[in-house]
Amino acid sequence: MEKYLVAAFYKFVALPDYRAVRESLQRRCEELGLLGSILLAEEGINGTISGPETGVRRLFEELKTDTRFQDLHYKESWADEQPFYRMKVRLKKEIVSLGVEGVDPNQAVGEYVAPEDWNELISRENVRLIDTRNHYEHHLGTFSGAEDPETTSFRDFPDWVSSHLDPAKDQEVAMFCTGGIRCEKATSYLLGLGFKNVYHLDGGILNYLESVPQEESLWQGDCFVFDNRVTVDHSLQEGDFEVCPACRMPLTDDDRESPLFELHVSCPRCHHRLNDKKREGLLERARQIELAKARGERHIGVKPPVKSKA
Image (tube, rainbow, N blue to C red; front, top):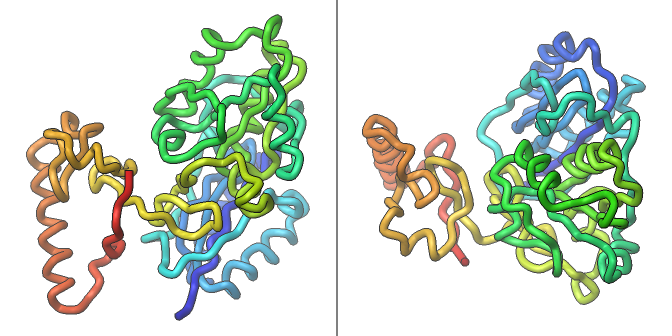
């Protein structure tokens, strides 16, 4: 069975011509048979793509002919099925949205900590270990002892910092995220506030899971990824979670048992936000999926069903 190479990558780098890059990059990804999402902004590039191994590797060979992209932060994994539905290159104000002007990881960033040194760092008593991801990501898996800022968006992180961290008291702060990009911005932000000893996991959780043997790992649970696999386990294999059809958040057994859960439609998080038109559209989509299944076909945009776990 053919597998799909999934590549997550980013780099903070000055891209004053980012608007001009979009069209050619979109066209080249389509020519190579790639699907996924790439964000371009004046501060850099951030994306995850998937496709045949030859196509993915060819794209990165071509990207690296531009000196600005020669040392992209890059991680790869494999999927049994294409984890994306379409290819989209988007223009953004930020490649990861913190919403604070003047934060520039190209100018200042925290100390990178290699995965093999991470356990020792976060086991120190005086280190504040912060999960910079959103609450639903933290809920599915995190490092032992990590604090959850309970954010719904990375833009909420500065407010949490202002009420929970103090540069005069918190002498050492270690942060982590999925692939490293949010932490680069978060550490840059903290340095700008006067924090002195700020660390982040080099390459993020995905690099840690790839590098640290499971028997030595301090990671607990699955890692949320932003594609149709939903999560990956410690071996970077696809996890067992499904997502809500409406809000695309991971579903747990508690979600399904809630009176606000509606099969094929919504979960407790988004139930109150759906109008009748949206609800009927989701039900019609479910009907089309069943019809395609009866014909032995795969409905476009639908991932085969998987089992769930809390």
